[in-house]
Length: 216
Image (cartoon, rainbow, N blue to C red):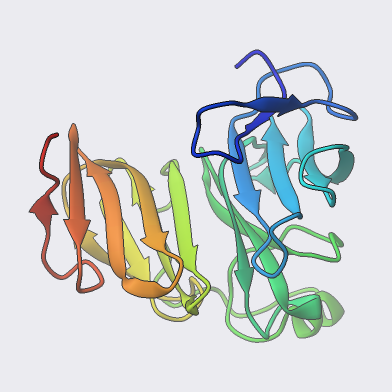
């Protein structure tokens, strides 16, 4: 909240804060590059999307805030996803208060999640809408994807936890209780953790069944 991004290389015992190149203001979303752990993206409310290519030592502006529903929107959640349909193979997905959007890592234009290739959409200026999108106008509070299966995405919304098997074109609600955060194991896309209501819950089968995490 005070600005900058904190990094720990010893499990949280000590921390450093990287601020060089970042504007003043809170950081409210962070994502690590899906192919490069030294590539980091952050969202600054009221400003835009910044990136670091040196593990947070320095930062540059990558993209303005997305324009959704007749207004600029601050990303509330970010995730880097390695999909062939992106230019260069990488998409940056952003959850906002008005829904989901994404940008290829060329940072040429924010666009809706849609079937087909990013270049085709840019050339045509239009593309088919997603077949079964996330609920319209609802804030996307958290996003997650596993490098082991990048086409599988998870999203936490006030309406519940949602999952997609095709990079966000078709979404299915897998938990009906309000969800505020979601994470996926980097090597096992079926192992999911989520904050549902006020509880931390775990799934070992891609969200089909859940158990409450044991308190320690």
